[in-house]
Image (cartoon, rainbow, N blue to C red; front, top):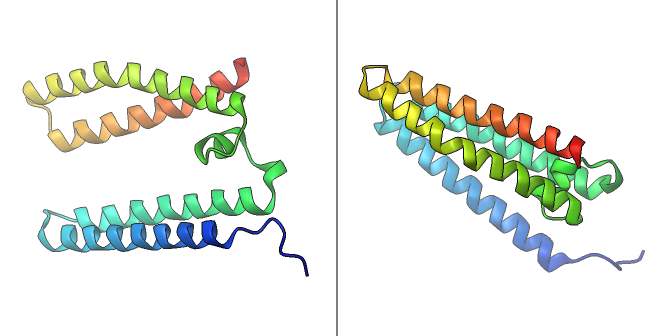
Length: 142
């Protein structure tokens, strides 16, 4: 059995980092659950669990089937080529340009009396939507 191409140190550092992130997320979630209003802690823990599962799925796909990984997976994990990096950079630039006016509109909406939690939720979904549309459009065009 050949061990060429295996990097145990890198794998151990990655596993240690993931465990540290999971411990931090759980700690923050439990503190929020205990001291934050409403069900903020539960929502945080559910969102973090979905995010961590997505990261693990992406890492598994990159490790087991790198030829079938998407442009986003290669760019986000920094294992892609220059084109993948350029697509991600341009998509994040579009999101950054849209973030300022969206945030300003959100602040104005809160100032004139809109419910802050609804405005923040809409702001988050708008930013996710812009990023979710910008990446495939830029990927298609380049």
